[in-house]
Length: 326
Image: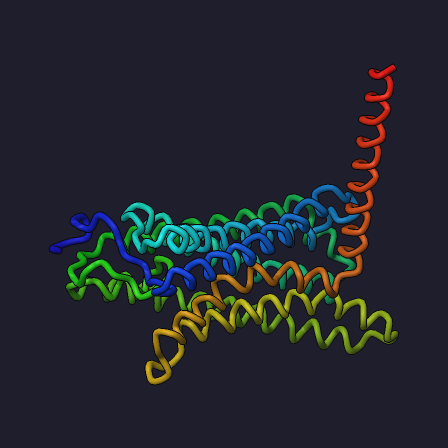
């Protein structure tokens, strides 16, 4: 193959050789996917329906859940389809779309987590200026900046990656399309251009990481000065879920891309890629709902309203049936 245009499809990594294991992977991924859809969908619905949650923190959490839904939907459905139909193929265009969406959503999520750290910093360290610094217009602008930066970042890397000449076959050592695996197929030194972009991106991401860490240093310094234990507990309860989500997101991604080659193996690479591409969007709703009393109360009200609505509809149905029979 002389260049990327001659490649009609890529071959993804097969998760299993036997039909029984392929079906096991399908049902396992389907269960995780449905759990992620349910968890993130409930958070989105609850925040949208409960006017008490129409605050900056929950507005950003709603955006995070939307990103998580898109993130896990980018990789798992195709992997499930390949396991179900016993195939490894993904079209050239499908692979490019998967790379674009994956990079777009992961970059937007990292930017949004940075914005959420700023939200917690202002809420705890500058509470008197919270309404001014984080008004509705400012929140919309910051969320739009997170989504927009992810879009531009993904467009740049996807266009640059798929403009490279590929001549090392079309088999990817991953269960979804990602840039490092495609760079391995390049047949010239032009891949160094993309490596350079990735290094610049790493510097930018490190800058955001430093910003988040400095924000939390200031947050914890402010929290320990709160005189009442109840006040400290409430402040920590609003920060710890975000810090846990960020730590999970960052630690799995860093281990996936920065682990030394000496500890690399096909099985370990598969496990690590699963951890950073599947686990965070599936676990994030659980992390937020476990520590957040307001969200748990809103979820309880949502379920109660749904149950009452179901009972009312059932009562009306039986009443109509009796009237029609008479």
